[in-house]
Structure formats: C-alpha cells, structure tokens
Image 1: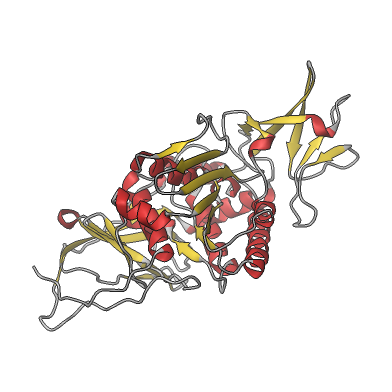
Image 2: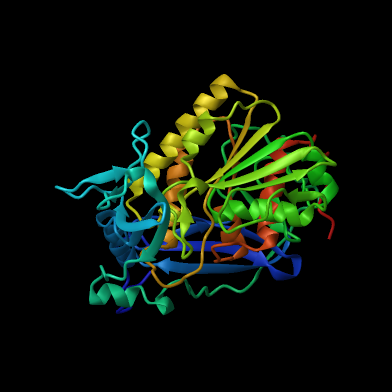
Length: 436
C-alpha cells in the first residue's frame, strides 16, 4: 500500500474487502485479508469451483480515514437528533431525547435498568413521562472531521478499486478430486470466514450442508407447524416481506403500515411469521410510535419457547452511529436473554443474522461499513459458544459485491435458505466430482 504521496506505507490498518468471481458461472466468494501491520497485506482465497476467476479488491478506507472514523464514533453520542412527542388528550409537547443524561436536568428514562440500556428524554413542562407517544429522528450535520479528514472521506475516495496486475486465473480440478462431504447444519456450529460461496447465484456453505430452499413447497414444508418470530431492523423485515411474496397463502392479518409489527399466517400450512423492530435507537425519517418496539431481551423473556418456536435476531445497522460500547451492551443483553430462553426451553430454535454491507452515502460517519464490520466482529465474539444458528449476511454481500442497506432478493433468498438448512437439515448427499 502507498500513501497520498505514493510513498510505501510502513503501517497497516487499511479496510479492504476482497473477492474472486466468475461472471459466467454467477459464482463468487470473499477473501480473507491478512494485515502484517507494515503496509503489506496477504489475501487468501479458498477455491470452490473450477474455471476462470477474476480478482476484485476494494479499499473501503485507508488507515488514516479509519482513525478519524473511530475517533468520531467513540466521542459523540449526538450524531442523530431524537425528539420525543408527548400527547395527553389534545395537548402536545416535544422534548429532546438522547443516550446520555445532561447534568442538572430532570429527565424521563426509557431504558432498561436490568440490562444497562440507557435512553432519556428531557421532561416536558407539564406532561408526564408516560405521555411519550412518538419519536422523531433527524441527522446532526455538525462536522466532526478536520479539513484533511473530510477529503479522505469524500465519496470518490471510498470503495476505490485497487489495481491488480494479474490477469484472470484459470482454476482446474484434478480428475481424482472429489468435493468434500459436509455434515448437517447444526445449532452451535462456528461460522468460519468465508462462510460460503455463490455458484449459479445459489449460496453453498463452506462448513455444513445447505439446501437451496428456493421453491414455495420446500419453504412451506420446513416451516409447517412453526411460529417464526423475527426481531430486529429493516434488513430482518425483508425476510417476512420475501416470504409473504413467495408463498401464496401466507398473508398479513392486518394491513401493513411502516415499521409497525407485522404478522402473517399460512392457514393451509399451519405456520406464522411475525416481525417486530428493536427498541432505541431507530433511525428513520418517519415518526415512530413507541409501542411499535421493545428491547429484544425483554421480548425473549416473554416467550414460552418450544420445539415449534423459531426466533431470528438481527441488530446493528441503527447502532452504527453510536459508540461501540452501546452496541456491545445490547448484544450482551440479547445473549443473556437467549441463555434464559434456552435454559427453560432448550428445544427453541434461535438464529443470529449479522449485518450486511450498505451503500456509500452521505453521513458517512453514521452509516459507515467500517462500523458495521466492527459490529460483526463483536457479534462473533459475544455469541460464540451459544447454541444458535448463524446467518452470515456480511460475507454474502461482500461476495456478491452488493453495497445496499437492503440487499437484493437474490441475497435475501439465500439467507433464508441457510436459515432453513439449519431448521430442517437433510442428510448430505454422496459427493460427486465436478463435471465440466
């Protein structure tokens, strides 16, 4: 790596994503970046298919930009402006809300003392704390970066393709080579990197046997008799949207409205899917009624569980804007909630879906993929050793080179297929050699 003056760098810390792909085969896999902390990097690719592959490297941020992003993430709690709207009959008042209490002020607390969750609104002039009805969010446009840092964080300097002086590489398979037989997907398995690869736009796990689960019949056959509870952000909401669109008799029982909880039921196949968003923080241009959300750990405590209860959890995107301690505290409280649930009902099936990459857009200090990368590393550590299924949304979007807050249907369908492969594992077939 070289700096702005084209001098060789003598230190590491650059944020690089890497993949190889074969466009004609609709195949792709992410690479593992090894940082030697001296300005040089080694990228390891596992070869899952034969044929011509192209190397694709992106410098998401230089180490200098990473330093600025880390500083501003950790020092500032107010990148998002929260305004609470209080109602009592016809009376309405508003008040600023935030994660920190200001000294010498009277506040209303909307956190959870047991789990160390903090969220406060300044008490209004006359209305009680219980009158809080809606939360409105906006972006704080205060610039926390220096002039030089702003230049590094311009859109043209983010996600820049790194020139690779290597032509397409042809991968061949020896005649006596057989693909490895993978065991069934089981709860508690650790997810390696890369966790899988795309081939013909289908995701194949690198560590357990996955089925495609792309047809309505295969999906309904697995979900029959089950209650699926989805908790998290709008990337988890995509799952219920995908399933409702895919399965003809899976219908919402009440009209869909914004980020309100959603419940869909399939009467013919006797299963239900419910989505509910997580509690503070939530970043959106639409006013959010408070009764739409609750802390996931408390939701888990309210569930009886059982062999037909399935839970999928996905958090992170809305917490990128705040110091990472807030996110770590959140996922620790979720882990404890899962542990309590599995202790009283060990047959309950729980899944964690990590964050996906998102678009390079304005407010780069808030929605940055570096923050998402750190969140994902934290999730891997916090949920390690827990008997849950893991859906690696990050690896899928790096491999497919999708940088969108809401991934394409191709990616969502494969996330659901991995999920169902854990839920309804089939016996791995005998390996057969590649035929080309």
